[in-house]
Length: 183
Image (cartoon, rainbow, N blue to C red; front, side, top):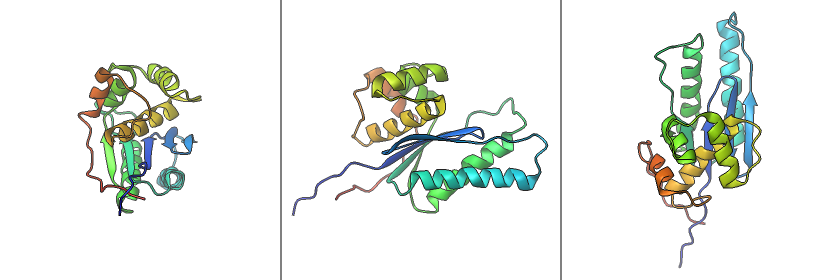
């Protein structure tokens, strides 16, 4: 009997308190939310739960989740704990469902998209639209698409041809071991 390898189901997540970007086989979307500095712990918890639930529902069951790694908080803002808590809630929700998670540093995402690890989000958006022919309304969705594309490329199923310099962004990521997928 011959086994036929199918396409991996990969999701890309750009986690944010104000607009989490999600990219799946179905396309891209964004989970927008707003908070208040004076929000109670109960309100903040409800916001994080809402975002996590929406992300989990949008992603569904996949073979791999590629999530942008946390940024350095050397100059923390008022939402440092909420951002970290949200990131961990989302990661934990997939680990708890035994879905492997890859952590991709922001500089690797930028390098893969543009050829420069220090590229601004607007340049990543432009590169994503140009390379993949996607109409992306926000940089959150562009980042998520790039993260998904990186996961597929890492698994040998690239969405498009990416220059060798850009593919350098695949190194420096935390890639989990995945079982081979077959029909």
